[in-house]
Image (cartoon, rainbow, N blue to C red; front, side, top):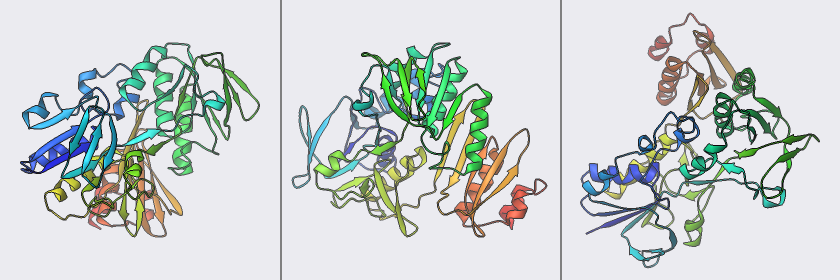
Length: 402
């Protein structure tokens, strides 16, 4: 009987084992999770869960009973110490586990501040796991002073929650503008204005020199020479793919665990999916950090374990909730040379990324219709006339028929 072992019980790992059973795989399945919890959603952690609007049991991707009922051995609190690829064995703290197929869904790790600048002080937090959020939640009290380091989506979402809960919020971004790595200046400006309207002190082009305090963080020195008094700090400076096990096992690494189009690593018995995996995409190689990618790529790998020989066709999409604004993104904006702005109703707006006449991506703020149409156009390889997109009188659905 074939044995599939999956390391990583997050969105990708959970999706993969569920797909195997749904497709009729009748072998043995073991899902290994380092956290002491069944697989759960991460996106709500920094939003609804932190706000107290979501109970812990609603975070679960599936009821805990699902795994046993479907013949999936779920091992929580399982720390994998190594992989013996030659003998197809996974080393755990309490013994070894043999596999026929091994899937790495190890996800990613948050970047942390160096201890040399105070990153090891108490009160310096990251947002990745439920334990991270549970540890910081008691600090979210009205008038508490929080410094957020990093103006990406994680930092901005944390700022929105803190502002809504009445904290005094300062956000510093070392780059010239927030979201500089991932979005156009128009999108950055939209969210800068949104946050400032809620009282967030956004400082762009300003970095952190060091954190100060005896044991617990009490202050921050910034690169512009200013000093802040703080009660705690949230670090949102990005994530790195969790490739340690793969590297130690001798697998090829290339901005993540390198896979082919079907999800195989450099070892044909080992596969990878989710945040940790890089894969071929339109003549280049990318790694996507999103729920949609984790699900779709994991399901593709499950199909291929069962012999489908199916290439992964990524359809990138992302979202972010800040205050009452829902940002929805479709496509990848790399290489754009102009932005087309479309005004929606009630303050909604969307920014369409073009390279020449080719539509690459869309950022839609509280405009679900623009997002859905843009997503369908991008996935179909269609590029509507930019003047028609910009004209509020244009029926968006008509763009699909053009």
